Length: 319
Ligand SMILES: O=C(O)CCC(=O)C(=O)O
Ligand SMILES: [Fe+2]
Image 1 (cartoon, rainbow, N blue to C red):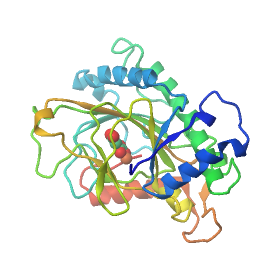
Image 2 (image 1 turned 135 degrees about the vertical axis):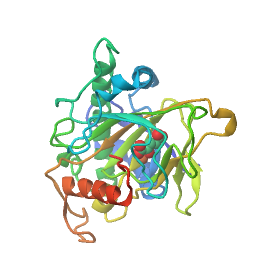
Image 3 (image 1 turned 90 degrees about the vertical axis):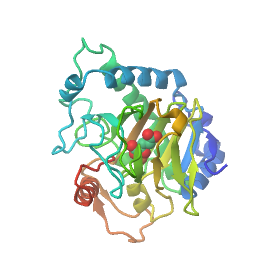
Image 4 (image 1 turned 135 degrees about the horizontal axis):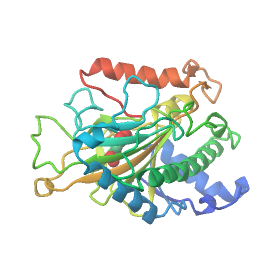
């Protein structure tokens, strides 16, 4: 299989700090995956499918609210954090295509002034998303530890630059995505659910519903299917991590096209956790090679966003 499944059981959430030797098999498998196609399915992470289903259920209720109610939560695009609702066709992740046929709700700084839908609309929305944010954060830190070990670095090499996840000093974002059924929409030529792109930060955790649809570019430049494997977490390397590791780990293009004709009446959901270093950190090549000059983490992400805005008339942002 082009995207391997790796058993994370040895370091699943709830397991204590494990000696590096006990992690050695997993470390090697993860290194192969991240330096190959840049994607891996992790099984036995401690995040259960039931938790993911809860997030999907509560998100669907949110996306089904009237447009006017969702508008009250709209993301402020001038702001350095990504909190809030993003409506259909507002973003285009590929500048070559029209706006993406998806909606999203972002939670980045959980202690900030994020405009949540009123309790009356969906009482449990905030609680479910906040708690899933914390679970994803805990898993992401473990994956960052294993990634550091896989490169022969100190265990906390990456984690030490991700201390402020969940505060407004870090851009890490939990994003719940909804791809509406298409039969009621007018689909423009070349328009897709999520255009070709790579993610910007350190790494991304991704959970899809069973409709699948994600495609990942392999090393030969062909798109391969990355279906939903229930109970697993799909993890991919993002651009800043590729740069940080002097291209040893690879950040890969991926996309979600339109569903087949007989599935045009079905929706799709996914949940992504985009991990970023703390805004003030300076990121220098971890091998000391100076292949890329040191860069401030916030300037890097905002630079990527700016370029995307210039390339497209509409907003183009994937955190
Ligand atoms: O919905 C998906 O499966 C992928 C979404 C994605 O890649 C992104 O938002 O960066
Ligand atoms: Fe992505």
